Amino acid sequence: MIHDEMEEAKLSCMKSDTNGHANTTEINVVSTNLARTGVASQVSDYPYSTRSGLANNAIDGNKDTDFSSESCTHTNLEKDPWWKLDLKQSYKISIVVLKNRMNCCPERLMGAEVRIGNSPDNNNPVCGTVTSVVSSTLSFCCPGMEGRYVSVVIPGRSEYLTLCEVEAYSDSVTNRNNDVCS
Ligand SMILES: [Ca+2]
Image 1 (spheres, protein in one colour):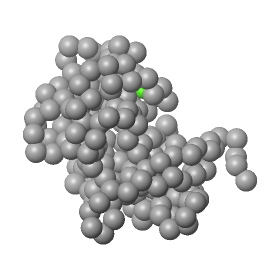
Image 2: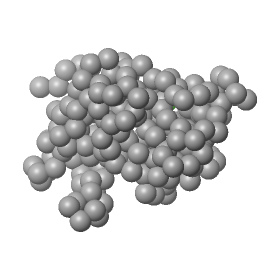
Image 3: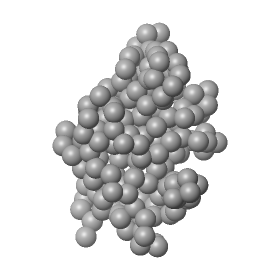
């Protein structure tokens, strides 16, 4: 039974196996995008484009990857920059999907970590790490993870953090192989 407010999506997501190799699996999601009702914040706002880079732009439902569309976030240059989604209560999160900026500098997102947990300071378990920016859509399986906060952090360097959209799906997931993301 799919409620009116739910959307069905077919997604591929990346999951690391026990040897640390990333595998891609295709799964069917019947779930609301929890991000749309959350609250977004980030370490800082890029000071030279006050309208364009706000944290909320990553949860406005617009996946446009061109920064000039005013639907992407943009921090200032920061050490270990972060963007954070507060879901206002804890959820089981099965998949997180990032939409990277593509009109410029997609490589800035390399090494970014998706973290999920209940610590508001972003010090939470890592669901996945960005290891390629060839595709604008970066999907991560987060089986068994739960938390109020979904963060994207670029650890270990000074960088601008830009995200054009972040989606978080809960555990209402069916998988073709019935062995991942459930
Ligand atoms: Ca957006």
